[in-house]
Every structure is written in structure tokens, then in C-alpha cells.
Length: 266
Image (cartoon, rainbow, N blue to C red):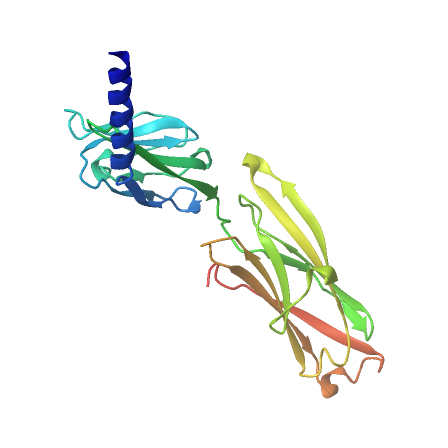
């Protein structure tokens, strides 16, 4: 008798395994980077095969925050937790609409799909989401004032606006990227509200080649990983013509720094 029961259980288990193979999460859409204060749509697409849906559960860092159960009177249930603000009217069987993304919204998101009797299959998929706070302005450029001889360095400093995480700064001279080894990176500084700024110094030697076209365009760019646009500020170094500079020593070159404020985003 016991052997018959064991045999039936084994057969039932093997059938369940075979049936569960038809259930799968076909796609999980969770943005790798979300913008602080904006809204994001999480999508979990799944294929149930011949089975019937029992429940879809969403987790953040292994804590359940949303459940969709089609046979329940209250199909959509929201479990509050930090960083999770759901619009239930826009959420459903495979969609969760997150409002007002906060820093606490960053984490590991999991969609778990379970089917009804007799198989009670369960499949899931996981993705990470980061949250960034965009700067309110582009980076600022300081330095470069004064007169220089050929061979001197024009020292310029670029400082990013406050953001989370800190922007990655790059210097460009006449459209050509300056290698990091040729700049001085001052690292990241933590400011109020746990926001961050970074700064990088460029020391540009004054040479005839550099000024061969009469002016030099220098740009500092602040960029973020992923989908975030680039922010920049430009300066132009202009060499005075011979008639204007005749009153100066032949060995002295006057360089004027003009700061041109560009729009925040391209």
C-alpha cells in the first residue's frame, strides 16, 4: 500500500515538473536607471501555456510590495514600503506603475508568477534598478584669467553641479577629448542632502600650435551613465591680432577667456 502511494506521488511530481516547463517569464522590463521624481513602468510578460494564472507578486529587495490575484475580489493589493508609490489605476496583471521615484526606490526587483491547481507552477525573473538625481545646472569653469607667455599653462577648473551620483567630467580642446592622465581629478565631494560634486583641473600649455587658428575652444562636459543626457559649458580662448597687441612686449601673449553658457541639455 505504501509503495503504491509513493509511486503515485512520484508520478504526480514528474507530471507537475513536465507541466511547469510550459510556464515562463518571457520578459521583465525594469529600467536600469530611473530619474529621481519621475515615474516608471515595470512590466512582467509571461507565458502560462495551458495553465491558469493564480497570482503575480512583485518584490523589491525580497519584500513583497504588489500582488495581482485575478480570482480575488480585490485583485490588486499594494503593500507600502519606502521608495514604493504605486498608482493602482495604472497597474494590473503584468504592469506596475511607480510614481515619484525616490532614492529608496533603487534596488532589486522581482516578478514572481504562480499558476493555479493542479500544478501550482512558480517562475520568476529579477532585475536591478538604480536611481539618479540630475543636476539643476551644467558644470562651472573657473580660472584662466590673466596674461601668459608661450610655454605657460592656462589652468582651468571644472566643477559639476550637485547630483546623485556625481557626474563624470571630461575636458575637450577643439573637440578632441583630453585624456584623463593629462588632467587632475579631485575626486568626489559629499555635500548637503547626500548629493555629490566632482571637479577636474586642466592645465593647458600655451603654444603657437595651440593658437594656430587664432582661438581655442575648450569644453567641460558632465555626463551620466545610461540614458541621461550630457551637460556642457564652453569657453573660448581668443588671441588678439598683431595690430591690437603691438603695445605689449613681443614675448607676451594676452589671452582673453570668454565663458559661454550653453543650455543645460543638448
